[in-house]
Length: 446
Image (cartoon, rainbow, N blue to C red; front, side, top):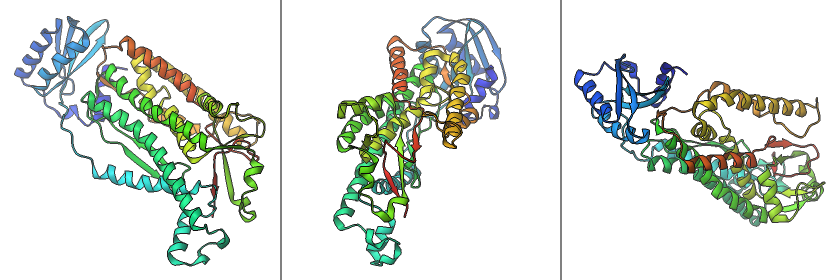
């Protein structure tokens, strides 16, 4: 990528360098003096308002120490330093913006979105109760009005005991799901605060018509990370925090689950509802198979047996899936941060092979779903991720100091995280089977 491209990429953090006037001579002098403290200067070049100053030479301090000394001096005259290595030389560039370090209170929108997501996830969690076969909103309407004609299946109105059990199931699912996703996002947020990098609070996205009740959460950095180490720390903190919660929740949820064939479940479903039940088959990652072996003492699925997964375990499974998707090693995903920290700009060479692999999985899943071929891997949903990667995740998030590399501990942790990605990735996240042998949960359609 050219220098112009790197400069423009920083614009996503809100500044518009092109709107700035050239710095006064006093500011240029101050920045040159600051550079002389950390660099044997070879030449100084004046540019335009977007990138007004370029100083080339050889750093006399480690790059992270040099940046730490440069930043306050550049900020004092309204600029932020950027460190680059160009054509074998160390380069200091001046970005005509200073990022605010003031932390604001929780935005109202984030709180409202969280509340809506809690209700959305609770609604989906209640629907996962094994004994509830009517939409929870219909049940509430009947309870409030006393009018059983609101449903075509008045005989399936749950008893108070069944309704209370469904509410408990929904609450447990909500606690597990948002606990895992919230821990993931707060890992990013707290690590950003630790490194004094401005970010938004997590914004949860409600989606009551999905099988999770949410599309997850997003958190955005308001400024570039100082260097690859900081960006690596922020990127990897979310998956690590989420996994620390998701794995024990999965084990707990599996202890609530049962191993049984589909016929045993169908025997508990009212005759009038058997044509209105959708049964999903969850994807099998290596870690998930291993945890099922840990709890049940055998490899599952096995023949016509698999785990009828409890909603708490399903929330953990979804948390692992979300973590795997975030760890896809590309662009500005968490996995992209890890890969950029490990390999720098070289990571771009992996972009096409990764997209190509997902295209193959998407094509295989599509052909399998329409009956053209009979295979057990692939998922048509990968087409969406291919589109996201092609159009939205073209490059890695910029950093101010691109010279500083990861230390040994971070490199080792990055390699461990790539191994974890292999363990939790599943080529076929979800499959709807005509005669399912592995059960996720049932979904009443009335």
